[in-house]
Image (tube, rainbow, N blue to C red; front, side, top):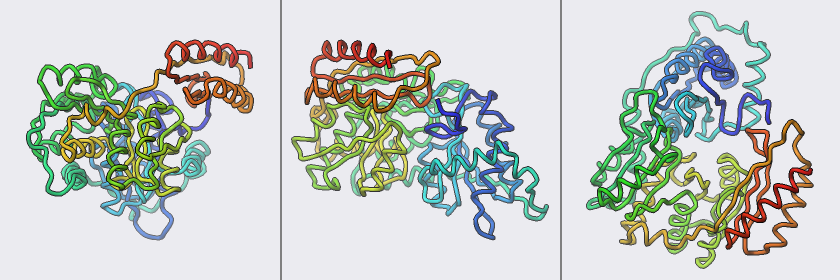
Length: 447
C-alpha cells in the first residue's frame, strides 16, 4: 500500500473524507498554484469536472486555493476528462485539473492534473504537490491584493470539444443509416457524445444522459453495460456504446449485443491500421493484464504487442518513448496519440465507427479477428505481512510460464491500492487456468 497522497490516477477517495476534503483540495490548489508559476507572468489553470454532487465544493476549493496564489482560473463545468486536456491546450493554459473519480460511484471523487502539454503530470511533480500540502511550508506565501487571481467560466467548452472530436472523423464520411445506442453513464459525456454522434448523422437511442449528481455510473455506462446491450437487441441497433463517468473509457456492443472490451476494440483498430499500413512499427501498447488473445489477433497481420505495468500513464509513457500511436487497457481506456494526449472514449468510439463505415462491415465482422483467451483471477490477502519479495514472485511466474509455454500467460503482482497480491492466469483451457491459479495462490501465500 502506498502512503502517497496521489495514487495511480491522481488523488481519490470518498468525498468529505480524507484525503478528499475541502481543506485538502484548498491546499492542493495553493500548492499547484505555487509550483506551476515558474515565470514572472500571469498563469492560468483550467478546471473541469464530471457530474458528481461533490464536484461543486471541490471546484470552489481548488479555485480559491489557486486564486489565493495569484493564478487565474478557467472553469468549464462538466466535461469529459479528454475534453479538459484538449481545451486547456487550446487555450494555452499552464495546467489542467479534472475533478472526477472516473468509474467509481458518486460518493467518491478525485483530483488529477494535466501539464501544459496535455499529458498527466509526472509522479515527481505529484510528490512535490503532496509535500507542500503536508508541510505547510507555503502557508504564509500570499501575493498582494492586486496580484490575486481571477476566475471565469468558459461557456462554450463542450461545443469546442465536440468540434474537436468530430474533426478526428474522416473527412467526407458520415454515420447516416447507423442506429446507435449511446449510454453516457449519467456522467461527463451526457452532452458531448450524443451531440457529436447525431451531428455526424447517426440515429441515436440515448441512455444515461440525465445526471442528477448521484446517479453517475449507477447501473449504467461501461461499468454496467447490460442495459446498453439489451437496448441494442431491443431497438435493433447496429452498435452500442457505453462510456464511464468521465468518458475516458469506452465499451461497445455489436449488433447482436455481444460486448467488446478494450482488448477487442484495440484489435479492431489495430488490424484495420495494419492492413492500411498506418500503424507505426506495427506495434500497439497495453498492460500486462490485457488478454493474450489480443496478441494472437494481431500476429497474422504482422502486428506486435508491447506490455507495460498496470496503469494508463505507463502505457502513454511507452507510446511516447517509442513514437507509437495506439495503446490502451482491457477496461476500455484507449489512447490514440494521433488524436489526443489521454484516453478519449468518444474519439475511440468514432474511430471504431469509421472503421465500420470504411470497410462496410458490421462490428461483429470486424471483431471476429479477436478471440479472448480464457482467464482466471484470484487475490492473496497479505493479512498484515509485508509485500513478498519481487524476485520470488518473478521466479514463480517464470516457472509457471515455462510450464504452460506458449499456451497462456501468467501475471502475479502486488496491488497498488489494496493489501493483496493479484494472480491471473490465461490459458487455452479454462480448467487449466483455474487449476494453475489455485496452485499459484498457495505458493504466493507461503512467501
